[in-house]
Length: 269
Length: 85
Ligand SMILES: Nc1ncnc2c1ncn2[C@@H]1O[C@H](COP(=O)(O)OP(=O)(O)O)[C@@H](O)[C@H]1O
Ligand SMILES: [Mg+2]
Image (cartoon, rainbow over all chains, first blue to last red; front, side):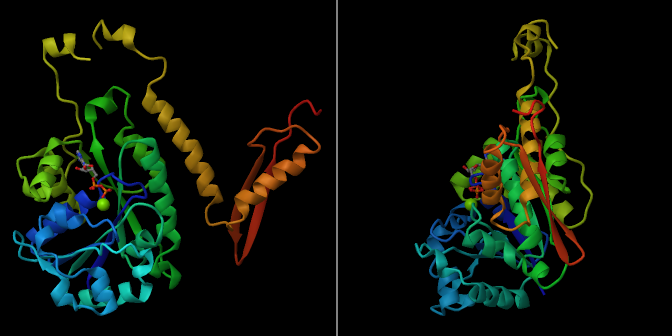
């Protein structure tokens, strides 16, 4: 039985796809057989971030409709042995993700994989609901910014009520916070919500903090998940988050303001 | 803090304004959550009814749905102004 993990946020553009690619790659590199699914029907992007866009033949909806089987649609990652990508369909039919269809695909994947990472689209429409419905746990991606925090709280409400586990009388699934695009200096100056502020408002466990980083754009330009950039701050922060996800303890890094020298203090703003 | 920073210090840091606003709106949205979908519309209508008799603020009607055993309890709080007009 695989563990199904939804990467969600409510708001768009906060880093869900970046995170899905990073976490899935990190898990696979640690030896766990992992599938990552793009639920963003009509706006396929995970393939680009994973660098496999030219190898897409069949997609998630093709498998649901029986036009292809899973083996044909899954793309084997070239860098991590245990990693497979199921791309989103580019159809404009938002109802293409039927609950039965999604369940069938997840059940079949569950037989083979240890982890299934579901990259949720933004919003609270069908795609987002389907990505969350079968999840065993959630990673809530949030930026330190008012609308992102509010939307994350909204998503937490949905996670608490609209999952298979809850509908079958079980406990609400656990959601952990991944605070991304964090700029420690701006938070220290009181210009950006701090880790503590967001933690206090959302009141969920913290999985990690990913700094705002040029490395993320570089990685997406190259089609390489940023965890593979081992020198980079964001890459290392994602590695830590994967370790914590697997139950290891890791101190937070890249959350303190670098100390400025005398001139920095005089002329820095 | 450097000497020049003193003059740039805003009255209240924007992050703390953001935090306060978030705490209020999130608390309000959580209270409405889990309740029936008609709650916000009902809240607006109640407000209009009350306004036929007394001038009240937009946030005069607060609603809260609680579950007690297998029944739901709708708690309604209406704040009237001090000087009744
Ligand atoms: N830690 C980060 N630092 C800098 N840019 C980031 C970071 N995380 C994400 N981004 C950028 O934000 C944009 C949206 O990211 P993406 O993962 O596609 O978000 P989503 O899937 O939530 O819409 C992309 O341009 C990405 O490069
Ligand atoms: Mg995305």
